[in-house]
Length: 388
Picture 1: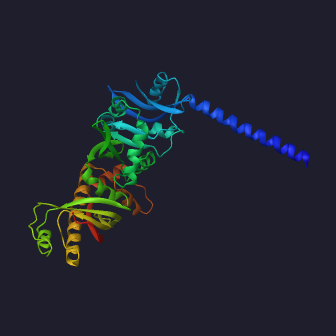
Picture 2: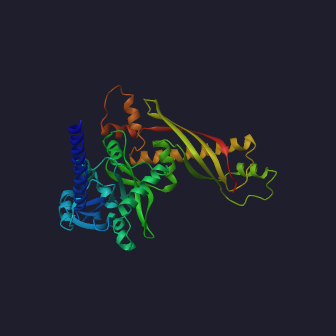
């Protein structure tokens, strides 16, 4: 028994020493590494690439971290990494990469070669966010120097995208989703567009891609409709404006509202939006698609007083919302068709009706020109809230 206790004590001391030493080794290893948190790519001249990275460095004396911006020019992304290492006293690693920015000019030429480099790096996860700079990627990544403060731009960029994805403002632009949409014959990628405003990085648009090339940009007013068509809303919000005489007449009938409406448009805000969209090929010969959108929401706010205690008022409001959204969605779909891009995935639905036959990109591009859209929107206002 005594011998067992002695062996147990020795084993415990050995394991404790191993853990302590392992911690020391890990700490020393971290001190030697420069963690790349964000990288950006610009076109330099005709064929070269300008790379900009934000590196997080750890100081073992203060247990704090600092960041450094490194810029280099090369012919390939691997060539950039070699030159970047020459400017760092720590070995650069990409295991903590959280976001990548491509310049507009580069995105218009095509980014799949640079995206493929990310795919081939085993240290990089497929949840990295991909974005497009309104102008140059270096302009965005150099903002850290201009601010003259110790801001971790890598963390800021990641949080900027993540909180807007979680808030259902934009679609998730991960490496995984880009790959899925790029390699899928019946679908095209979309990525958020970033811009520097007042020394801050903001999302100003959504880039529409044909394969790996940026061909157009959606403004913020269309984010809502793109999200409805591609993904589900679970608890989102949206402001909607109407220009309609029918609503004004209903407002004037409100006994508690004596003044004449003064706005040319009536704005409402709906929140707690839950949406479900069904896209179905109803006529294979004529390529007619039925796009059915169902939304449940709460009316949170209005700029004019409408007696929502009357079912007729709520019904009229729902009808107006349906008509407005149908027109906006149809306009958006016709725009995609004219551009020859398919971010929604109508090609996937078409292929599903071919009984196992796989279509080529050329075949779908030809068929897509004949597509007809029938859009139906059904809004249900479940509750009403505050009147402004």
